[in-house]
Image 1 (cartoon, rainbow over the protein chains, first blue to last red):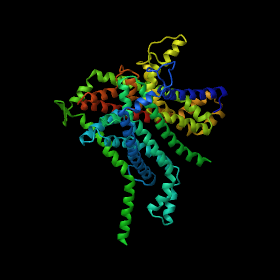
Image 2: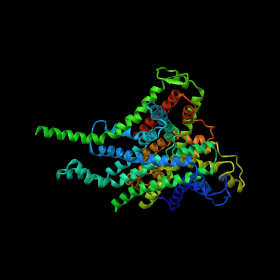
Image 3: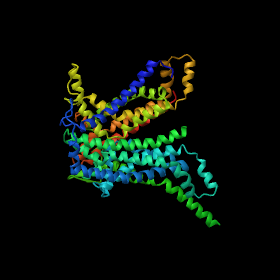
Image 4: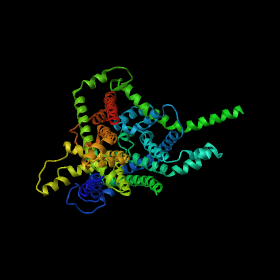
Length: 265
Length: 286
């Protein structure tokens, strides 16, 4: 748009402000996780690793971390596989009601988490699952698979649809065409989906709190810390979760963007 | 030969089914199933602290005639609307800058930076805002240092908006930007050629043409704010009871799940109506 240099600079500065607003809570979290004062305020106290020592000596926190990792490692491959299947089916086949099925598959992130939590709790307790890790896993697959489907479907929309048929015309079976055309073309987006699902599972607290019972993940542990009192331990455990989820998301973005820029050049 | 053709067709059907069915089956079992149970649950009875399957309207009557429910409903609705409007207004200049004033490379990086917070622990970020806004917090100390004394900012509508914009801004910016990036640039050039100034181009061309993106962004902000319970609990200090808090409290305090189910269904109904209305408006011909 042809606007004055000043307008241009002002709006770009506004973007900077928005980014500061979004990253400020993340940054203060890191700062105060290393600060000796019990109550987080300025001026800062001394540098300390005490809060990290405290949480790493806390059996509840350690158990929560273990659960988080277990859940994410089981959820991500299953959700990605199902998201992939749905994305591939949408790309490859036509059937009546396909649009409805797709909308249905994208619904879970749009329903309030407390509502999903309540309905899951009622449902899973009727089949004897509530309060267990499998209950958490089952719900996280529901919550994450739409993300996997969306990110892999995006990749399919960039693939030339005739490639697979060409391979089949040359005598490749369904499976061979799939293995030699589809898999190589979607590899990176599958990996990106895995990372994204892990990140979403990692930070989910609401549904987990409903269905997990005494089985806590680290996000639910943070929720319990929050309910008890202001504690610098939240900063320490928060910093660890930030580093983890930011790495996962940046990894996923890198994989998706590398593909995009490669195609552009 | 016929059996070969037959088995070939079978294997093709199996191939299709293998890809088409897993996710829908999982979601029917573990998403639609729970949702249907939620509807049924809202008609159950609670006798001697035990839930019993039944078909009675008492829960609905009880909730829909309760003043505390309607107070929470209106509060949740107004909070979500305000957050949605605020996020939309803050996002607009950002999306404009991202789509029109940045190079391709810078655009990818900045959009990437906006996506990251969306997927990082909202709980911890809200806790950090508590640190900022609390009585001896950074904001108040800074204000005091420059001679402006204020009361605690925690538990105010302002704190609520800070939290909800933190939650929704990334999503709204990304949706608006995608919508502006897919705008046909010749439209803008045409407007300039017809003698429009930048302001006129913005209000007569860019904004109307990106209406679907702006409305969808606002809708998502509304949906997320409407369902959130963290902001109201930890930045509102429990002063602003929302529908989500109502559900969480009811579930926590015992067996009144059927009543919580009524509240949950009212939330879904509200979201459906809002979504339908905004989508109709977004895609209506101008």
